[in-house]
Amino acid sequence: MEQLSRRRFITSSAALAAGAAGLAGCGGSDSISGTAATTESGTANGRQLIANFPQEGFVGVGEATRLPFLITGADGAPLDVLSGPVTFRVSLDGRSVGAPIDVMPHAEGIPKAFLPLRTTFAEVGYHDIAATYEGAELEPVTVNVQEDLVIPRVGTKLSPVATPTTSDPAGVSPICTRSPFCPFHDVSVDTSLVEQRPLLVLLSTPQFCSSAICGPVLELLITASGQHPDVRVIHVEPYADPNDVPSISLAKLSPFVSATKFPYEPTLLVVSADGTILDRLDTVFDAKELDAAFSSVA
Picture (cartoon, rainbow, N blue to C red):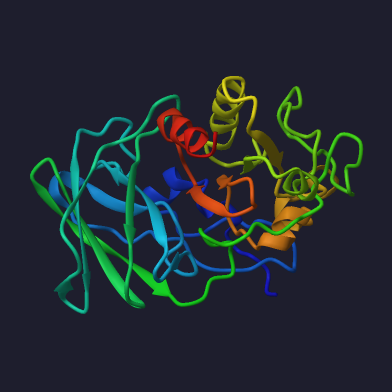
């Protein structure tokens, strides 16, 4: 596949919100490609609605979907604090789709506020998503709802990937870019699926993530996991050889990314004991959402 030109687009949300012209590369000539949703959403008080997810290849028809949004201030940077609720409206071809949806801001344990809109799209096509924030109408961001997706979809089975462990790094070095290593590298994903126990899989790279999110969400996971010993937790890195190349854009992809085709990080997969993906927390999540994820499988 063609070289990915924006693995870090989602972890660079501050740069995106500021209107950065280019997107940094992820690495690997076998990567998939796409563009980040950076559609500006109006100028009420200088605020804009930002889709913190890809506009293409991300939303599947008929699938319970979580869409994380940011709101920027007049300087183009995401607001650290958001009041709520924020009302979202979805339309297709100029007609309203469903009722307005109120979303409360989230920011527990992480350094930026976001809005996790959850909905299900019944039709394929380009949908406009608009929001009302503090009485101001923000112009919509457009997302493409598609029939087929490359990335793992909610409701499907997680692929039994042989991911790196402390005993078998599977050609990945380092297997964890947290210092010291996090405690989630004892068991491979394929082995965990055979165990038939609830599973959370976090794809993130604390060292090479270009925002302040990959590290904090891993720390949240470390803290929360101690309260849910029956749930297996696995952390996987996106790069196989990041320290062996002059630029992260030249790094090879890890086995998990090669198998799942995720073009962004972080993402958290919430997996039932039978291997079904129950939820996907993409690009940003907080302690409140993480607690709900554990509770859904515990």
